[in-house]
Amino acid sequence: MKFTMAGRANCRAGLASAHRFVEFGCGLGYVTRWAASLGADATGIDLNEDNLAVASQLAQEVGLKNARFVSANIYEPGLEPKSVDVAYSRWLIVHLNRRCAPSTRR
Image (cartoon, rainbow, N blue to C red; front, side, top):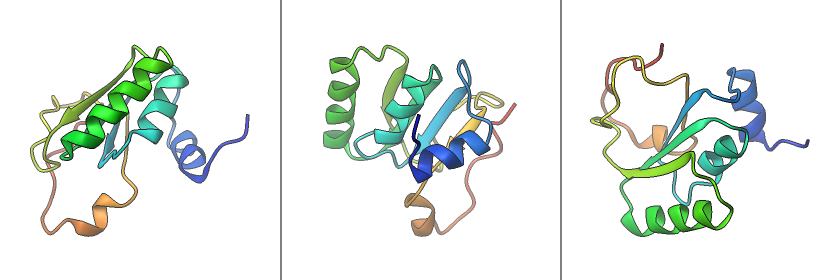
């Protein structure tokens, strides 16, 4: 299987089937859906409701029941402590101006 740069980075971070994955600033959910296709319990977080609706529709079209998309602020994402195995963000981080929530990693 050929991986994109995001895919290679997430695999190096230890992403595997049954892991809990979150993508901050998911947009249309390409990486979230990719993680779900590998068997991860994948959550995409974004503020853009239109993008989240499209991401959800795309996941439903291919039968990804383990991909969900949530409208939330990265500073208050609504994640329980120690509820994430792998977190990913590509472009959102450059826009942050304060520290994010405490660690949610196991």
